[in-house]
Image (tube, rainbow, N blue to C red; front, side, top):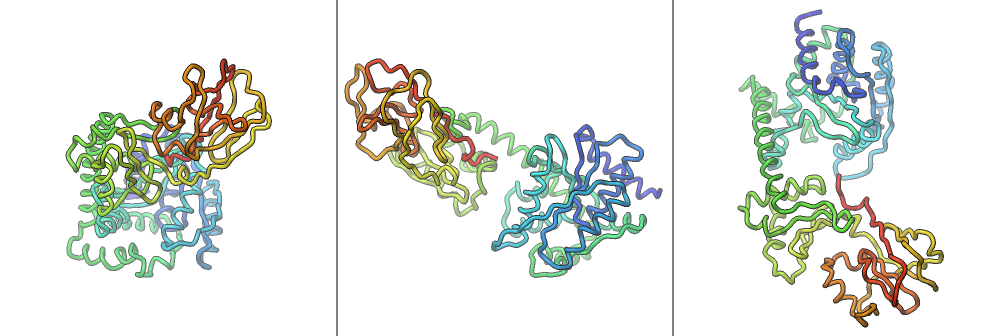
Length: 442
């Protein structure tokens, strides 16, 4: 074995050291140079080291005729190495960016295949990192974007690892030729109408002719920015803790923050905290859209401003900032009879209701607020529902989603507010299990 090969194996082993006890390593094998070398290196390492079981995954998009031969190539390659291969065929949705749609389809397939604690290994290398940093720079990315691709991040039930980020493409190609490896070439990589291809084929070669070590220096800059981003993340977590960050409201998946502590920070710290809070909820707003946050922050206490983002919207209520995902906003209230009160009632898109204790008699029905409802409460007389909700501090945006229990023209109960029960001595409690899958949390 050449010294170069041994060096690559040792560098790869060092990069993967924290995950050597993972249940499995699954290699995303495209059939190209990078992933082929990665899989070959891992098989060589497994001959002298105790490693997790190694598998390969090939995702076939079917976007071009030449790609139809790649699954067979990957199968032959894996057979020669003694590695089990799974071939997954996906459909790429139509959209403005074919690259992005293909990537989303690919990673959706990877996510579905990863078991608990398993690692997906991909072949992005140092040149890919330099390309990513430049691409994001020209799109006006901030510190988080300019930190480039992370070496490790969560993916589904497991982790995504990029163990070759400090290795250049030329080193990988030299290894492949030394070991007689064959790989496929994607003809679309030669098309300069794709932005990344233009950077790879036209811009980076010019830069490296002038500055031969540019790939190393760009990757090093990305490492510095990663460190800076980590520090900003720590600051954001402290600020979010001070803003009473919550993921639920009365058992409902409604993320929220207290506006007062946020508003006391500098503008840049406000945006930093909100960026980190929103990162798991939505596509982050660009610079022009941050005016929406200022409108929310500075609105009158009785105003109801809305900050609309791609994946949902932010509302202000009760001194807090609330995140409402598109799935939450899409709910359409519908009247629903409850014919068997001894059993739970599933509310399409809105969880389920059930009774504790002896349910009320008569024909029951679940409705939603229309306005003007009145409720007769023991010892309190007839009370406007609006005032009762105000007293309970229920945010205005939530009220139209609260299931109301009716018997003919009598309002008997309000979901979420178990003390609001009509009748002299009600022997029942109306219990609501709110929906748990539409907060946008990822």
